[in-house]
Length: 341
Ligand SMILES: [Zn+2]
Ligand SMILES: [Zn+2]
Image 1 (cartoon, rainbow, N blue to C red):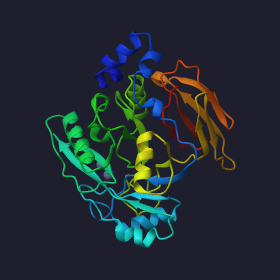
Image 2: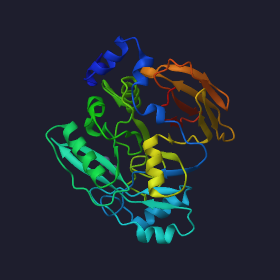
Image 3: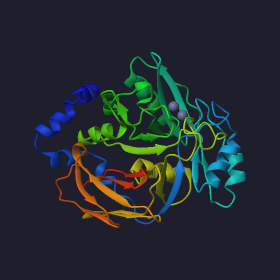
């Protein structure tokens, strides 16, 4: 019950369930129907949350970009605190062969009553000042709207960092459909505790209430000069694979807003298809590992489990949403985005 209390706005959730019309509920909601990944396109591995010496990181933008490029990523968003780092010179050096893209970004870094409220703006046209506000929701919404006004795409960062942003705040937000379900910083409380739900539980509550949000995994990397130290915010812990037509900032952020990506801490897919009939997940299996796929629906319930790849889920038509979580035998996971039919 503590968990329910922590998520203090169950009214929408209850109303949807009480109607007994889960199918009705999701069919009236915009967004899920558009969540089908596009056919074709290319998968690009990227990280949307990174710091440099332009705020509180320990390495220059050039060093940071080099790390990601050298580790198999295809794009990187530099997101310093309240700084919009120019990426033209970086792309001139690192993007010459169209193998790598640096995307402009900023972590709009606000505070309310000592609580950190951080919203990433991706592919902004101009720097965004923290907007402040009178409540957590107000601060987030104002910053989201300021990011939109600068043509950026917002994602809500580390809600459980300092226990700043509750599920109820995410529930009421408008004009943002991305948030971090995994952030690689060691102090952000991804999995919750003490009666406060973790990000994946919050995600299922949001989705079950009809609030469409897509989940991002990223590094929030600050420290590149202490490789292997788990106690600092190092790189390479969480990332996304985005399916986009081409490696260009707009193509990437538009794919994110369509939900055409998956998040990972180490599991990679070789394909992920959604048709009107089914979801098919093909794992890029590594030697000497074993895998398990959970297809998850309303209220976080596991609808089907699979232990072979490709793994397929056939829609019954009564699911509110279906998302998949893929586990490997060493504790790594991947999360696909929710879809429904
Ligand atoms: Zn932050
Ligand atoms: Zn950060």
